[in-house]
Every structure is written in structure tokens, then in C-alpha cells.
Length: 476
Image (cartoon, helix red, strand yellow):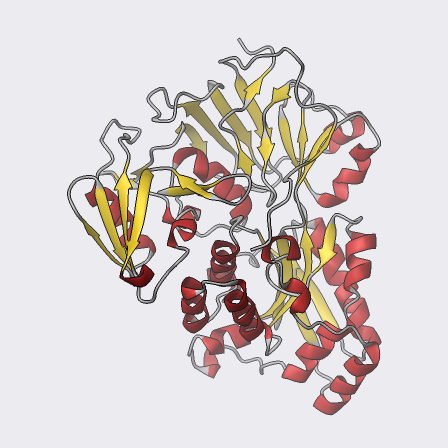
């Protein structure tokens, strides 16, 4: 796989010479979106924010470091047998937040719930055995995905984790207060608490160019330019999030559901291909998104996969018009986008303009039900503009995460599980994109604004946060 380069573009100094980490204080974080639940397997309209918060409470058997290498987490060692179909994971000594010890039976139950097609068993109190349907050479990397986090079900139906923070207060979609886990196996975190406020507008902060008492704020890419000219601490990830047009009815039919699930006829494949050819991805990336994105040929960005440049993508208005003529269709194509995302709105509007040049009418509407699979089934739109985060710095695990979000066929998901070489993943992507049901548009960066008193907030190349060394100046 391509070597993962430096994760962070840093503007301004994030640390002071001679300063030493100190315990205490509450880190106040502002999120633009509202997270409704924190369970690792819960469906979320904003999966990147969901995973950031959930990972403070829950942990996986393995984890990825900043260079994209797999490292121990709740498992301190592992080994493969039977050509990579059977794996044994040795658990470390750790406790859940209630004080209950981490045991193989709990781990096995959690993994069975996440992947019912796996055979998961125990071998004593501290060893878990996983058997996959096909050889899975990258299973340790896959297990670092949050959906495989280890949870313990409580008698009241809630779940608890082993992570560095405990959830002390929870107002769904509004506020989450996480307090330090004093008995964390990896050592107590520096902050006493992390206080997250959701659905927050940054208008006043942006006008004043100052975060005030807040320590970190999530930015939309269209807000970055406002702060770039000032002496501000900005963390901007690599172009990681996938922005793609996904045709919905084709998704349902692919899952062997009857055609009667929608009264709308499937969009002709030639029209789908024509929309792809008509897109000016360079203009979207360089102008609309202010060079904080790159045109997308495939599902994974080039900096991670190393092969995206091999995937075909043709921008030709002339050929787009020919395909529309061949299809002999004048029916409009309806495209839904997340009404709360200004970036999605801008990109959707440009796609409609480009399609109109090819003689295709794309009708747009903002909708609050675009970001989860269950909600998309209620849409009457032909297609939806999705934004999906890059969930891992390992290409195989990242593609597995996208396969779930894009509702790819079980055959493709199995192929990802068994992939051993970049060539295997390249073939998976070609298969997933060949019918133009999924049209990659751009890979988009994520951005974070930090107060000057924040130290050691690590932004990974994919925009996810690593906060194990986080501390704040002047903490009491």
C-alpha cells in the first residue's frame, strides 16, 4: 500500500517550548452536527462525528497508528492459522467502566453481534478465536474499525466500554460530557473531562476570529478561508472524505429486493454515465472547495491506495451528450443532498449545472434523510449525494468501511475481506464502479480550529482525532 504521509497541515504553533503536559481542566469542543447516539454499531447521520465521540468510550482489539500501521489495543497479541482463515487474539488485562474485567466471553459476544457471518469462540478466559468465511489477511486492521468495538451489555439494556473516558452526561444531539477514566489500562488521560456541544453555529467565533473559552471547533471546508489569513491554529486533514452520487433504486435492486419497492423507474445506465462524464471535478475541487479536495476517480484516495490513478474516469461533454441521445430519455433525475451541509449543496448545484450542459435535467432538493441507509429507503429521489468518511488508514479496512456505507453487494464485501494485494482492491473498486451506480466526485478534507492553549491534539490523515496526549494550558 502507499505510504501514508504526514497527517496534519498545521497553521500556527500548537505547543510551547518548555511546556510540560499537565493534568486537569475541561476541554470544550464544538461540533456542527448533531449526534443522536453513541453505540459503536448505531447508525448515524454523521458517522465521522459519531465515531470520534464513541471512540472515547469504546475500544477495539486493535488500533491504527498515525502512519497506518496496526497496533495492539484490547488485544496485546495475535496470530493467524489455516492460511489466514483462523485468528487467535490474546486479550490484555483491562476493565470495563463498571469495574467488570474484560473477558473472552464478552469479547466473543460483541464480535458475533458485529459480524454474524464469522465464527467466534473462546479459548480460556483471555483468548478469542475468529474464523472467517474466506482467508482474511488484514483481519487485525479490519478489527480496528469502530463497528468492532467491544461492548458489554448491562441489565438495563445500555452498553459500557473500556475507553479512556466515561459518559457522565448525555443529551442526544445536544451535549455529551465525558469524564476521565481513572482506572484506564493505558493510564489516566490528562483532561478531567471533555465537554462536547453539538449543532453549534460558529458565526460569532468566525466574525471575531477567536474561539473564546472554547478549545476546539469543527469547521466546514467553506469556513476555512475566513481563518487562513489570520494567525489561527488550523488542522486540515488529507483529502479523505468521499463525496459521491449514489443511485438509490439500483441499490435496492442489487440487494435482491423486488422492483416494486419504488414506483420510479431505474435511471438508464447511459444517463448515469453521462452525468459522470459531464462533471467538472476539477472546478468543484479547485473553485468550490477552495483546493481543500481532489477529484475522485475511485472510492479510496490516491494517497492511501496508491492505485486510484489507474481507475478510468472520462470528462467529456461531447460524449456525455452522445450517451444522453442514445438513451433517448428526457425524464429529469432527482438528486437529494444533506440540507444541513453547505458543501453538499454547492457540489450538488454544480453537478446540476454540468448535467444541464449535456442535456440532462437534474432536479435538486435538500433533505434531512440522506445520510443513513434506513432513511434513504424512504426517499423518492433517484440519487443522493453522500459524504462518507475514510474510516481507516489501512486501505483494506477503509474500503470495507466504505462498502458498508455504500451498501455494496455481499460478494464485493467478501472480496474486500479476502483482499491481500493492492491489485485485489483495485479489482474490487472496478467492479463496484463499473455500472455507474456509484459516481465518485471528490475526496474532501476535514478541518478543525484549535485555541492557542491546546496541546497535542493529533489530527490523523483521514481527519479522525487521536487525543491520548491531549492537554490544555492553564488547566486547574
